[in-house]
Image (cartoon, rainbow, N blue to C red; front, top):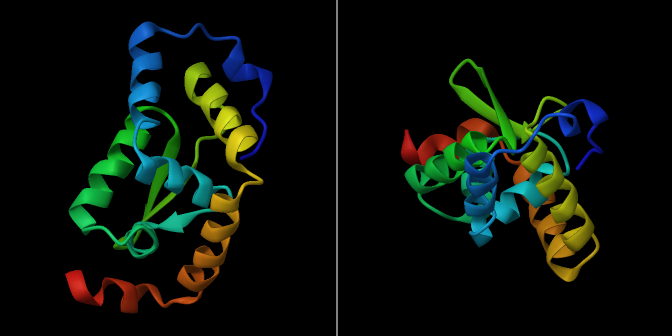
Length: 133
């Protein structure tokens, strides 16, 4: 996860903002998504394939990460892409992304996730979405 500039750290963190981030980090699937996005942007269908969860479940996870300010979404045609939040991320989100990176970047879980990502990134997006419309 890229280092965040001082721009976001100059803003105060509110308790509700902190709690949104804390809640978002309280689920293994959402933390795995953050680790996966370390390698760059992913389409929602790639996240579905990576987590092996129902598309609706993954959508809820991604909405929660976005609401907490941890990820950003863009739409291109019918595809929704996610990336880690940039410099405008709320202070709590920026600090949380740095914390996740420091704690998990070099562990066994990160290595396993990296291997899974190689396979997911090689798949055709249309093929990934064929089973759910």
